[in-house]
Every structure is written in C-alpha cells, then in structure tokens.
Amino acid sequence: MKEDFKQWSFNRKQWLEYGKRQMEERARKIEVVRKKKFDTIATHGLYDADTSHTYNSASIIEPIYMSTAQAYYNSAEMEAALAYEIPTWCYTRIANPSNYFLEETMALLETYQTDLEASCVITASGMAAIRAATEPFLQKDDSLPPPNFVASAKVYGGTFQQFSLRRGVEQGIEVRWIKNPLDLNEWKSKVDEGTRFLYGEFPSNPQVSIFDIAEVATLAHQNGVPLIVDATCASPALTRPLQFGADIVVQSATKVICSSGFSIAGTLTARKNIASKVGSEEMKSDFAMWVKLWPYRDNGPALSPMNAILALNDLRYLRMRMAHMSRSALTVAKYLEDHPKVSAAHYPGLVSYEGHAVANKYMTLADTDENMYGFMLAFEVAEKTPDSSVNARKFYDALDMIWRATDLGRVKTVATLNAISTHSQQGEEGRDLADIKPSTCRLALGIEDVADVIADLDQAFKKI
Ligand SMILES: Cc1ncc(COP(=O)(O)O)c(C=O)c1O
Image (cartoon, rainbow, N blue to C red; front, side, top):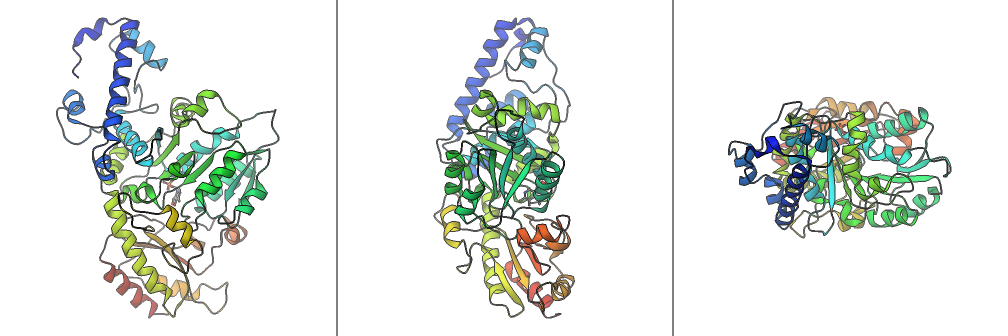
C-alpha cells in the first residue's frame, strides 16, 4: 500500500495507528504465506509484488539495503520508533529490511506445517546465534542454586569451546556434558534445580550423533527449562525441532542454508512462550524478538545485509539440494561401510547406525514421506592401533577432487580430519568425550555426481 506524504505532519497518535496497520498487514501476509508449500515459502517468503512496488522499484529479487541507518519523517515518528511502538529498522545493528526478509522466511520454515508461532533473529555467525540463544538463561538469580546447563558433548568444536571455556572457565558456569545423547537416563541424571537449559546438536558435527528430541524436550519442560537444538546439519528441509517440542533452534546458516559458500551467518528461531526459570515475561513470551530488541542491540552480533541476501538466495533451493546431497551421502555411506580400509562408518541412514530408528522418527524430507539423513557422514580409516592416524592422513592427502577444508554443507564435497582441525582446540580429553578419534574423517557431500566422489575416494584408499 503506497503511503502519501501526509506522513511529514503525522503526530504520535497517527504514527501509532500507522504502525498498527503495518503490523496487521504483516500478520495477514504471514497467514497467507504459511499455508504454502516449503519450496514456495523458501522462494518468496513475505516479499511480494506489493512490497516490491512500494519499496523496491518493482524488482523481483529482495533489495540489499546497505545503508546503516533509517531516516524518520519527523520527531514523532523517531520517538515512537525508538520506543519500539511502531515497526522500525532504525540502524542495521538493531534491524535491517534485507535481514528482515531472511528472518521472516526462516521463522516460517522452522514452523512449517504446524500451528506454532515463532520469531527469528539472524546473526553474524552460527557461533553468535548459539551465544545469543544460551546466555540469557545464565543470568544472575540469587533465588536459585548456582547455574549449570546440560549439553551433549557431541557438538561442533567451536560450541564445545564456547561452552567449556567462555561459559565454564571464564564465567564459572558448570557445564554438564552428556556422553551418549541417545541415553535419556544420562540426561535425567544430570538435570537438577540449578539447570537452566538443555542443549543438543541434531545431527552432531562430525559424528552425526542424534538424540530423541521429543523425549529430551519433555524432560526439559518437566524441569521448567528450555531445550535448545542446533539443527545445522539437518536444516529445516529435514528436521524442524520446534515441531517436536524444542523451544529454540539455531542454525549455522553458513552451512547448507548458504551452500554456495559466500556468507557466514546464523539464525535463532524460538517458539512463543518458552519455559525458563529466569528472565522477564517479555523474554519468555517471544524470546527471539526479545533477543533482537534488547541483548542483540547491546551486544552487536548483527549480520551484514549483503550476507543476509546471499543466504536468502541459497535458501530458496535448500530442499532440492538437501534431497540430492542426502541421496549421495547414503550411497557413499554404504560404499564406506563395506570398504575393507574403513573400520567404521557413521551415518543416520545406515541400518547399522545406533540411532537409525530415532533418525527415521525425525528426519524426513519436507513435503514427502521419504526419510533422508543429510549431507554429512563420518568414518574411521582402518589403522594398526586405535591412536594412529597414519592411514587416515595418507588417504586424506591423496584426495584429488574432494576439498581438504574445515567446511561443510557446500555444493562442493569437502573432507575434514577433525582431530587436527575443527576439534583440535578441545584437547584429547574433550575429543574422548565427543568420541573423535585421530582416524575420524568427516565427509560433507556436495552436489557433484556421486560416481565422481566415489572414484576420488577409491583412488585415495588405494594410496594406503
Ligand atoms: C553444527 C554447527 N553449529 C555451529 C557452527 C558454527 O557456525 P559458524 O561457523 O557459522 O559460526 C558450526 C560450524 O562448523 C557447526 O558445524
């Protein structure tokens, strides 16, 4: 709807009415768009012809608003905007219209085909999203015992370090690690009055370990705390943890959401009315929005609008990419499982995988009944002794087409020796907890023809 220039003389009351109309219009759009299919939501989000004609010279692709700040018609608008009484973007560290398109699309995808209402805030990286999602629950509250949180030890090395060093060593918060996240009794044995949240990766990087989301969510809620899930390696195309009871889901959008590899980004999406022992009613009622309005503004983890649109552009094809990558990963997992130079292959799609039945419960390609298990797998190169990496390194150095890098979710297949890279900083004890061996090799399948990937693996195995 085109606004005419009457706005120059709007008073506060008129601005509030204008803001209310904008919010009603947004709610109406959300109701229309959320009924559409996954690929349609991913492609269009809330950006429609009306928005385009009004704000973006009728361009069919969303604008990249690089401006750091928004101007106001008059002081009445500025006052209402900065009091958060009307929609505003104000300053890119607080909000930005380009970022808004990615946030709205992610909130819709994470709640796809549910009645759940959720908000999303995007961040400069996945690590920033994890910090923004967890830190508010660790705030000081003298009426409670000293804080602890319970987290699967099978997490990305950066997350392990953020929790054990930044929260644990530097802030004195007790981190209670879960060694086997499939074991609900282990989770139960670690939760007590001081516990502020439960945390898990689904599936984990690199061992593709999983847990029963609904069971762990129930345990969290019985104890009045939220379950926070990092679903980076599943993405909303396969697993939407909010649907199964999780309160908050984080993504390193850097990975399969932005597969072309042009953008570091994170997303934090939370359902409305989450469980928590601490925090204001405002925080609990709309956590992601609260993060955006308050700690995000003060801490400054905002995403560049350029990166937001790069991620949004790749998000449109997420489901199709996931299907292709998952099929390739399953083919490669079966090849590795039977390979004489591989002592173990880890992939949720393998019948031999410990959590295969749980994976079938939670990992299904959106808009199909087909179980799919994602782009990532790990395997152990057979060694003479358990602490050796001689063969793993020979194999790794012989890879030709497959990239040696600490990356995953790319359109190009990437292999990683995790003990000497992504998980090197956490030391041997931390790697033991997380079950990462010197021989562990992670493979993140891209979109190449899988026959060429297997041919490369084959020639590299022959060099051992
Ligand atoms: C599962 C998982 N979560 C979070 C992160 C951190 O994301 P970012 O690199 O975007 O900060 C990674 C990075 O590899 C990851 O694999």
